[in-house]
Each structure stands twice: as structure tokens, then as C-alpha cells.
Image (cartoon, rainbow, N blue to C red; front, side, top):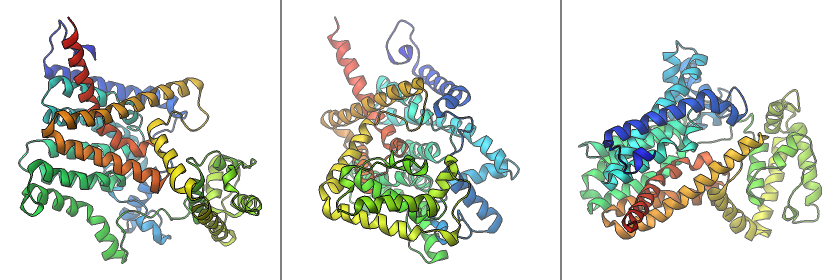
Length: 479
């Protein structure tokens, strides 16, 4: 990194520095996959998690039964996952000889290679924006060794591939290709179909074109090309939902049964109405431990008894909880459909959630969302029972993430003041950052750091500008 980023007696060309960064980034990704991931995740089968199967089931049902759905017997499963990542898996299903096990072995390697290409994308995005070799190389280095993308490369969920399509879109968006805005719109459409949260960047990319070229929408060819190409790709999903299934659905529906049954979904809504995290209550319920609720959960005299009764129902006749308890090994069978009490559990949790909104409005509308926002910036620990060395290492990584986020925010402010020709870039990143962080904190409320990954990665660009800016100041002030 020293030889790549700083001037020294061994003069390396920019191309050689880029080659070193790409090579180094690939080696780090490979080492994490082969060695580090087992330690970090604490298990050998780290390449899949609970989310993986929603996409694999959906694409297999399309291939074998002609319908894209996570479950052939559940109507809402038609809308469980947009098809981007499912189709991505499907490609390797066919390449693996129509063997899903073979596909699941291939995909982590492919994701590592794709993310290595992202280092190249970041280099060219930064070069197009900043036109400064040092800033460009710093941005490239920050991404090449950014731990929070590296840890998701081997895992077969949509995080890694959606970042690839996002950065590929921005590569064409900020580049000089004649058809760049068409390609950019197509790729951001694919990114949104792969991971829905990336759709939040689309309106800011569209408006940033108007800012950059200072033309009205109907007179701006680039704006029209970008919006139409995005609509053509992303529009496949809502068009399919309406034309084939007579439902207006632009996003997704998680109410698909099994783990995501009404009992568990209502619990999640309730727990995020009173606090930032679903722990420790989730662990206490599924492990048959005493459940400790915060004081403000008891708004009425009978709430204590009601919560105690709901917990017992969750443990003995809640469908979603029974699936999670199977995973934990605390029960031997899931609740049969004929014996579930999901509707009763859901209605009781919904009643308690309504009470929070009405009788504890400050906590619901202000305190919890602000705590969520704090967690977005300052999450410092991993879930689960991890070795102390892993916990210490993760603490350092999360601190590093927090520092880079604030460096990016300060960088945006300074770029706005000093680089007027980059106003469109500042608007794009700031808009995406604010919209997604606030939506996640105040509306969705389920905070996982991987959901923040696209925004965090784009903040590396202004962070690199800030680092370069101060390195230059130090250089000038040094005799």
C-alpha cells in the first residue's frame, strides 16, 4: 500500500500500482475464502445461510415447474424474492450439469472474481470523477481491502453480486462511453432485481444527470436513456406480477410461511416498535429461557400476563418460531398447519404494537429510530457466541468502518465546497446515503450491516478524496 499510494524512490507507473492493488485484493479475498471464513463465521458450511434457499427454490421451481416461486403451495411465495439473484444461481445450475450442489460450489469462486473486477470499476469511477492519480489509487485501495465486502464474497446471498452490478452501473454512468447511460440504467435495474435496497439510488442517479448537464428532463437525451433502460429491466418484475398474477407488487412479500409465518413476522414488528434489536428476546423464546422485556413494554396492567401468554403460544403453536427452534435444536418437529395458533399470536403482537404507537409514541417514533440510526453508524459487535479473538477483530473492523463512514461524510461536505463540477456526484451519494439510512432506521427498522453495504462502499469515494486532500496538505506543510 505504501508503494502504491505514496511517492517514494521506487517510482511505479499508475498501471503497475493498479495491477498490484487488483492482485492484492484478489489474494486477500482468496485467503479469506480458503482460511479466514471458517474462523470468522465459526462453521465450515459458511457459503450458504437461511436466505440462500429462497432463491434456489424459486429458480428450481421455474426450471422444473414453469413458475418462479419460493413455494408451489403458498401464494405469497410468488413475490418472495425478485428474480435477479435467482437467475444468477440458475446460470451456474445449468453450467454445473443441472446439479444445484455443483452450482453452490461454483458461485463463491465466481463472486470472488466478480468482486475483484469491482476493484477495476472503482479505479475508473474515481479516475473519471477526481482526475487525480493519488485520490484514485486511495479509493481503489480502500475498496480492494474493504473487509465488509470481502466477508460476503464467499456467501451465496445477493450482497456481493448486487454490489458488482451497482459498481458496473456507475462505471458506465461516470465514464465516457457513447451508450454509457443506457448500459448504466440496465445494470442498476439488474442490481435492484438482485438486492432491492439498491433501487434507492436510482432517483438520485436520474436527477444527478439533470444537475450535471443542466437540461430539462424532456430535453435531456441522457436522462431519458437512463430512465427508460432502467424501467425496461426493473419493470419486468412488477409487469410479471400484474400481468401473470393480477397483483400490483413492485418490491417483495416476506409472508411466505415456514420461518416467515404470521407469528414471527408480527413478533418482529413488535420488537422493533420497542427496541433496536430482536435480541435477547428471540434467543430467550426459542431456547425456553425466561424472557426479559424492557419496562416500557408494559403499558397496561395486563401486558405482563399477555406477553407471558404470547411467549408460551410462540413456543408451542407458533409456526415460524417452531422452524427457528428446529434450527436451534430445542424442538424435534415443526407445528402442523392444523394445530398452529399463528393468527392469535399475530393479533396479540399487533395489539401491543398499536399500544406502543398510541401510548408510547416518543419511544416508537423518535427514540427507537434514532437508536437504529446510531446502530447504523456505530455497530461494534457480532451476533452469536464467537471466540474472543474473533470478537476483538470484528470490533476493530467495525471501528474502521465507522471512521470511513465519517470520513466519507466530511469528504462530501468538502467536495461540495471545493469542487463545484462534482455537485452531481455529491447529490447522488448524499441522497442515497440519507434516503437509505433513514428508511432503514425509521421505517424498516431491522438493521443488519450488510443492508448498508452499497451506501458504505460509495462513501469510500469521498473518504478517499478527503485522505488525499490532507496528505497533500501535510506534504505542502512539510519542509
